Image 1 (cartoon, rainbow, N blue to C red):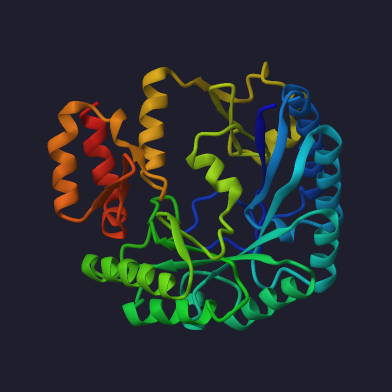
Image 2 (cartoon, rainbow, N blue to C red; image 1 turned 90 degrees about the vertical axis):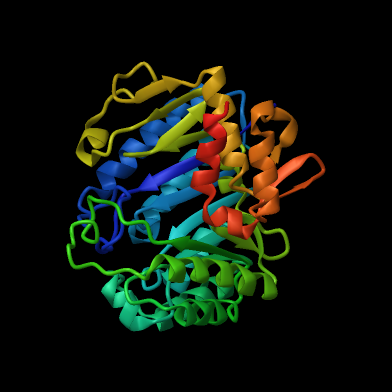
Length: 369
């Protein structure tokens, strides 16, 4: 039986960070209406995927942990009622420091959530304030240990680099700090300035120079490896093979269904998504795919081929060299010579140096198809 992943979007936050382009709002007055709509969509999609078995669930946002705990538990129960689950599924919830309590974490852990991801971003309190975070680093440390006490053995944290006024030494300090905590997974993201964010609208925003950003990434990857966190994707590192199974599903082009405003899905070779409109989502009375509410597009053979190339090269799995066109042979040789990639077991894999410029490499290869 085919397996599938489930993603549930919670578009609520305490406040909006200056770099964030995800769909989220600080007004949580719609929480109960939103939970009701989520449950209706879960029922509808449960019928759609009755021949699938779920092995990953991901609660993302926004900040799911600002959503009322009793409503989160209702969503978990509804998912269990309307989908079949494989043995030992991965259930992840995103959380921000300062939004969790031991009581809440204990309730989520007992309900089946077995992986938690904290948005830490930095260990520098001044920098956290500058980027619009509402927590201090001490809150992050407390949150990790609360999760550990509540029974979470699979804890992830997010870190960011290339932030305003950040230095290479500051990034390495961040890594030293979080790797001293009981965390099994670290996501290490570079800041991407989106135009519809406070940072994107700030004409005075000054970021580290390109060579500094490169050094932050390459030296960060090196330090993470020294600490036992192996890179399995451009921005993701894990100890003891504790990868994000749900995110690997995206990179391997496996099926998933998304619930909530702005959520995306990939099912039976069709990609579809709900609009970024909370009120329209809550007012919807037909969540079936026949509804005009969703934007839908079928992935053709060429698009699937390009997606597989693009996504595979983001990961340590790499891409089978046999599927690249003959005209790419010279370019691949250049990549190997310049140490942007390695070739072993018939797989082309980007090195950390290559992952730093992966967009350009992937674009060049796609142009040769």
